[in-house]
Length: 539
Image (cartoon, rainbow, N blue to C red; front, side):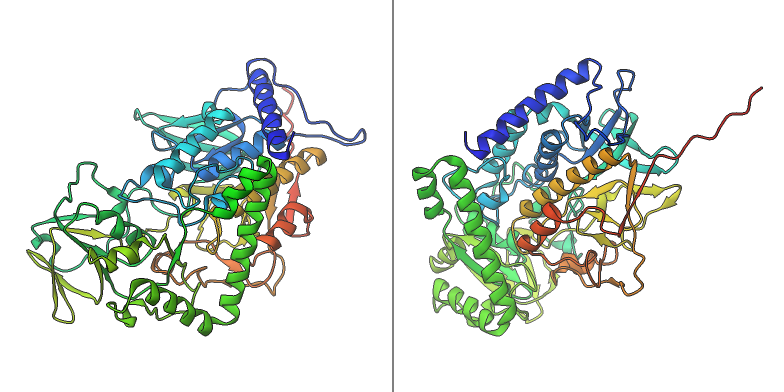
């Protein structure tokens, strides 16, 4: 049996064990050395209320499903639930429904380490990714642990009890209260309730339709329409070629250009490996091939920024042809100051070459009744204007978090190894890479936190708190990327520190060594035992 299938069998056994335990006494504990003193995070008994669990996961997207698999595989005696505010799993891949929605990373690394992506295309469309997530959740029994329509609004930590009390607004209007020993945030980093809208002058004058990709109308008919897509990021470069199938013409209006890179939608090497080798071997080789190639090109681009910049611009110019002026393809920054935009099989370039789309670099002065007036004096006629203007950052899903009555300001805490926050006990957070597939860091985060939970059980600890006592470590307010949404959200997002373990390197190999093999008791995290309850006076 290969490694992947062995993991699946182990996971299935863990699910069966956990399900059986939850309907009986559920008193099993992990095997420990004979001389170990064990005090689990939460002693579990049959009398536990349904809303009391060892680990509570917030969010049933890619991160939440991945964390759940790791938890039931590596911490099989732990009870858990996933609270999802929406009525379906999938997170980003269920929320966004605009035409052409797809991955901007290869699915062999964006997919889970424990479940190989077997789609024909490595750059996959949104519905295929959503189906992959649903299948994964069902196959491993994770879907049975999800509570839909459960939006977490508050979480309060008590050091006396060594537990989180979590207030949840349910879909039927009721307020529920949950309790857990460890709270894991897998709710992403942006506001699901709405995207960023700059608020241009004259918007109310426009007689056509204005649409934000985050709230795409299911009944929007753009057949024969003149469409202007405002923006130049990943969403814009996806929408433009996708809408040319029905629209009369699509214009991408950008304030400033971004780096656009064409890449084959199919990974021919990966498909060959899966055809010739056992699934586990093909999965491992394909995954590491893509990881190492990405790391190599990223390091070269950061070491030789001007050379990399000209190389990418030349590639885009060659792909799109001489009809597009070079200035429309020339960003004002260097590669990876902002994330690169991927176009599978050069679909955006093909649409421009075919005359179905074009790029305009300018700024909006005002909306008009029939379109947009630009600061250059030019006008763009439009029937539909799509505002692909980005996201609004919202740490921890907007949950109000307190520690012993003290409100946590996520804009002032520091990020510990990219998995926890300074002076916030027993709270983990999943935040993927900005220069690679999100799931690579999500997988490592889940592995590390499961190691941490098991370490606490083996040593009788009830709480773990990252705490900075090094006066040389200072917060670094510089956002991970220079993208607009990172700049706008800098004040509310956690900071990194000036040196490890508070400094983040966006490097999978380095994080692999730190999170999978590094010391848990590193002198920075503080482990504590459950506080003893005060003795009652005798009558």
